[in-house]
Image 1 (cartoon, rainbow, N blue to C red):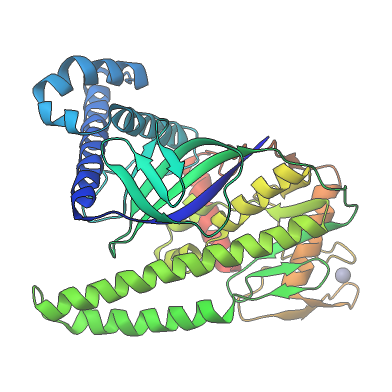
Image 2: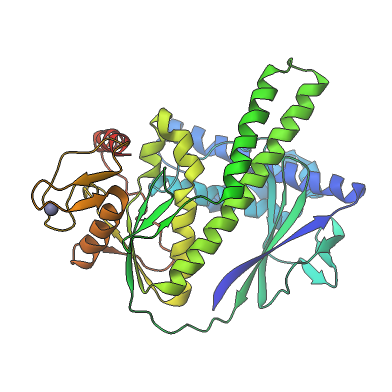
Amino acid sequence: MIRKAFKLRIYPDSDQQDKLAVQFGCSRFVYNHYRAVREGYYQDTGTGLNYNDCATDLTERLKVDHPWLKDADSQVIQQALMDLDKAYKNFFEGRADYPRFKRKHGKQSVRYPQRFKVEGEQVYLPKVGWVKAVFHRKMEGLMKNATVSKTKTGKYFVAIQCEVEHVQPEQKQAKVGIDLGLTTFATFSTGEKIDNPRNLKVSERRLKIRQRRLSRKVKGSNSRGKARFAVAAIHEKIANQRKDFHHKLSRTIVDTFGVIAFESLNIAGMMKNHNLAKAIADAGWNQFVNFVEYKAGWDGREVLRVDRFFPSSKLCSDCGAKHKALTLNIRQWVCTECGVIHDRDENAAINILKETTRGARESYAVGDTSQLVKPSAPEKFQQLSLLEAQEL
Ligand SMILES: [Zn+2]
């Protein structure tokens, strides 16, 4: 059994929009409240609070003090507490940054673990009612939970997670090493290069123009509001186009190869380098690797990673000679030891594959991303981000 998400757009009427706003607001309030409580408690006592502590406090105290919380679905509120707990776990296990407060003006979302229904062209949400929905593909499997979200531009969606039976495809023998980069999105050890798709590049150019326009508008003016909306709309579009690209590419890779090797990305560490932060965030490598991993998990493929300190772009993949780091603008180079001409990214991809299949490798269990970013000594982090910044 695997879990698949079906996303549909919903069209709540104005009364339902108000009720959804209550769900979003209460869930955000509870999340932020216990985010502050957990932090304060830790500072005072040196020990942490867990989900159960917060859940007890929620029913015995918070709901009594704030009776308006009853307007929200109780499971939605409990889910907010669970999400907070997960955010802390991800932080402590080195997978994510410290949990941030949820903002009123950001994207809003709540999750219903139960009691929602789907019938015909409608979705039933507790405390909200039957909401009109548009289905693009037929849903299948057993419904597990539903996440309702509202984008910054005011569109509403429901993502329903379903458990479906999955027939494992035939095993593939082919292996591939993949080098992820900024100039070319992905280079395979087979020599194939995958660039960001054209529509995505067009949107990114459009975003720059819109952002420039926004920055020229007078604060608080009507036209500034409109310009901000336009920027948010194009951000949404870019995120969708990128997701679509990542889904398609990861599907092709998993369909073609039985063993897929990546370099370990230290996204959290790299983000601290501000010059590169935007470019890396844009490239969305983390999302992409994530998609490859879970699809590989469904289809019984193996995903491997080389050690974070493995110098994939410095080694000659032919003779193994180690060279000095190359600057970013050098796309081709000649090995001074054996004379072979290398494409920079392809050489790195071949090295990644060689290294992982040599035995020195980390294998990933399905869905286990705990090794994605391993916590390490702060100075190591620093060193690495500098090193990687130069290599990129
Ligand atoms: Zn060589």
